Image 1 (spheres, rainbow, N blue to C red):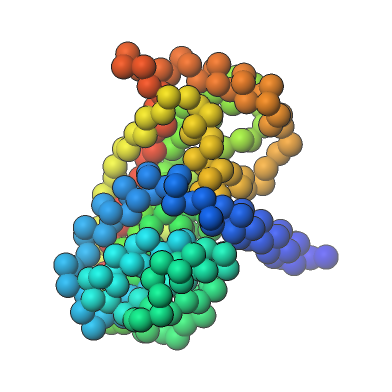
Image 2 (image 1 turned 90 degrees about the vertical axis):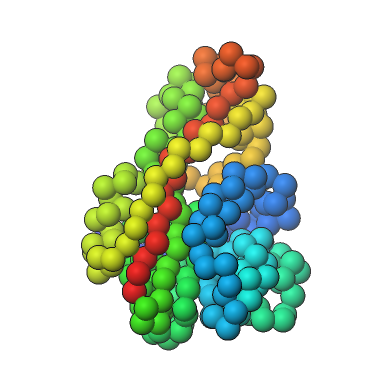
Length: 267
């Protein structure tokens, strides 16, 4: 097997695993997605207040929470997600009026060029191996003068959890995220010179590290790219809980820090 074919097979298996992880979490996602909604609302606030008559792609729509928001602003919404189970949850939430549903891979969108006035994608693109690929696809499907709005996680996210796991073993238990400079490089590679980026540090507070890990599993974000085999049993989780204690604030809570990039693309 050639190196290219091997890489393609690995990527295919990884996407299948990502889809499976999110499908398993489809029924529990909304209960654990407070942070995801907070980020999405920050991104949504950058859109026009009236989307009447506009065709909008919600890329990585999940359970359709923001698809519903976009619909309420007047948009004709296309919900797209890698997970069929997530799409079904979106269908239950949003119905059939002014909304359609498409099983889609952000790196190879099944749409013609220039179909959309707006592409909205919140906390989905970090699951792609090369950010420039979905960004180029967003550029392709946008109409002239269309806009793309995206959010993604950056290096430094979940640093407390990562440091706590390092006290336990040397294996990877938390996904790696790209740097702000790599986002700018990806935009250049996708031929998107006109853009605006904002950075935000967001902290979610927990009583225990178990609650954080339960949220990550509850939204399907427990899939690790190129996971190495390490300890994940109850004993290891107790050790992580103990290691995480050094981050407890004076107010008695444990922080989970996220570095978030919010971007606007101008076609």
